[in-house]
Length: 348
Image: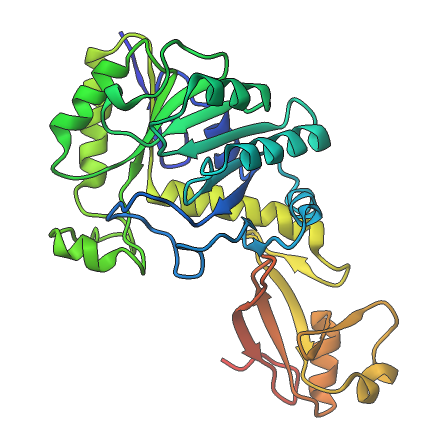
């Protein structure tokens, strides 16, 4: 009998955990956002206003100006693969093909790449081009197996990935049963609120789960029911239920921990959560340089960034200083700032 297994990352699955998901949980995947353009209008689309409807490319939290930005960010995160998303990343097949090939050429054939698509009009030639690009897995965003645009199983792994919408139990159960032996796996994602979809979600009566900031009430319960259904009614397909907390607490923060370790300065500390801890001094460098040992500071973001020890010494000499916890993203910001008093002590 098939078993429901625990990933130890707040998600569960039947069968085999997909390679892409295994890397994501460990923080080993970067996210290549190819475009915010899409011809669908899913009411639950969580894209931010910064990206939705725009043709910009992003790699993680970094806007891409040139191809080398993508390579640099992947190296900074020590990523072993990428997930290509959007918008509709297959909106331009040739462009998509080029980026997959570029990444495979740069990082090797074992660099795992999966992609998402809502396109149901892909031709046999399109699928041939996608396979030839070196893509490892293609995840279709469909709720009906008849929409799957493949006639025979391709060499690359094929999957379905959908949000679990409360009230759609019958539809999703039918999809799981129909997909058995046709595709490799189904990913069930916990439905989430975002700043851009909240009005449409509330209009349909959805509410936030009491113990979460974004997850929709009832989505997790239905997902677990769907896993139990798959256990009893499928023989071959793998099914993975990915929670909102899996994405945030594991996929996101584990990636940040890897990035933080790679970008930290010698005088900075990486916390167990993955933040960068340091001292800052809000003074002009010219007035401070004689007080700071060489190679223990830098001037960045209109302030002197240095060791906690240096910041405390500067505070004792009357300079305005603080200890910060900084997000180690390409667009860094202070997660927490604690001022230092004239004795170099943290101000509560």
